[in-house]
Image (cartoon, rainbow, N blue to C red; front, side):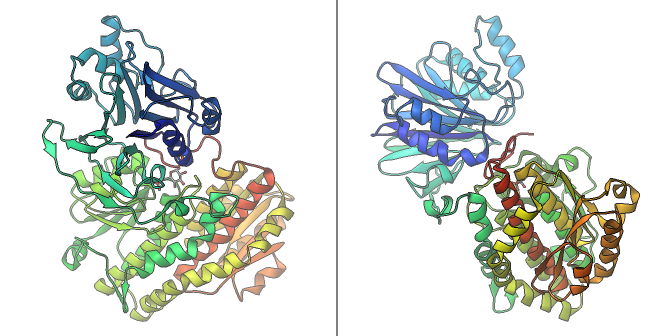
Length: 608
Ligand code: G6P
């Protein structure tokens, strides 16, 4: 999704902008551009290729001289990917340059108004109305023009703006789109997220909706929408650039897969004191928890799949009806929620537009909202009544791995915490889940240590044209994620089916040589799954089965078997996803796909 960077300092801006944009590549983009204020006006350079091209075009930024500038990676919404539509956009008099993330919903109306006043537009974007409005309202005061222009905008925006009359001043505004400010002695920065600037400074200020930041090399001032000055706190980022770089791996995805034992450990252990689970500053206390009669879990993509695991775990341990829904569906279906509802919002980025909208809808209905988020200070984290962070660190590969694993870990942790309070499940069962949860990092590591076996399996299976994942209960929940992982990075058609549904249609697609991946780790339903394996085998399927150690009955049925360490029956979800992250990675590697940046996908989907 679109990424913004901005710089005002004493050195040349362009090299910082290009480096920042490179760090934001992971968000997904189809064109990019930078604008620098040079002695004789604003100079821009754009590309519909990679940032690397922009670097080549500008001799690593050296060709654009100026100490203030803005940059952008665009993920097309209004208008195709092209240099004309790429940001930054200039006002007709070239006095202002603007980068924008979000959607200006009333742009057609504004375009009409401006066109009637004689403005002609150079792009098809919604963004271009912003520099045009700035020109319209400018009477010698940059800040004043920004406040007037912004007052006309409806929708979502994070904006970075420069003006030729104020050669040091960069103005940033935010509403429903991510934007942070980085501060240092040498320069001040804006960025869509910390990754872009963490190599320059670890001191950041989170700017809230409706606020305006005015940056110069000397400092940053903040104002609310009515121009009243604001005091903001500086936060110190607790991870460094090495955490956001590949660390010797060929791809971010593999680095992140390998980081899972550590990420899960950090997420779980930071909440455990003795045998007690403590979530800091949780407003959902015992009284409120007892009041809850329904749980809604709402998310998108893999976070939704983590939610499906959550549904099985919550219902089993808490005995509270739990619905899991896609945020894009939930937000428009007038959901049944009230003060007795706990709405659990899951999002790695904390910025997914549909998830954020669903959160607001749940709040409007009076539900208690608890978000499980990875990015500190993100919109969803800030909007929720409660937040439990997944301490996964920055996730760069578009296909999530450690993000998903830490989300599932938090769901288990939360379920144990709540089940202990509610006494809703057998004590021994809860406590053995708690013990197994603490052994999870070690068990994930055991699977990762055997990654060469999965690599060999991927090589052997080659490029199946189309395949099916089947499972029951939490095996089914994991099969959804395993299937998504494979299709998103290897472009292989794959579907996940609840194994009991096979007979209701899917089995007609099973023929000689069709690959079926059977997840059969959920102890209680192993025999049922074994029957499903036999059914597809009888029709010629090539079967890869995943089972917990000791289930050798499957050896005579499946062509290949992946064993995962034994653990608590409810916890298998956290283990059995790992081999399929690896499998997807290697299949994609052998096919030569762009693993970290799969086609058409974005890491952070900040528009609908
Ligand atoms: C995109 C990403 C997925 C992610 C989904 C939800 O589609 O590619 O990996 O699961 O967005 O993102 P979130 O940041 O809300 O977890």
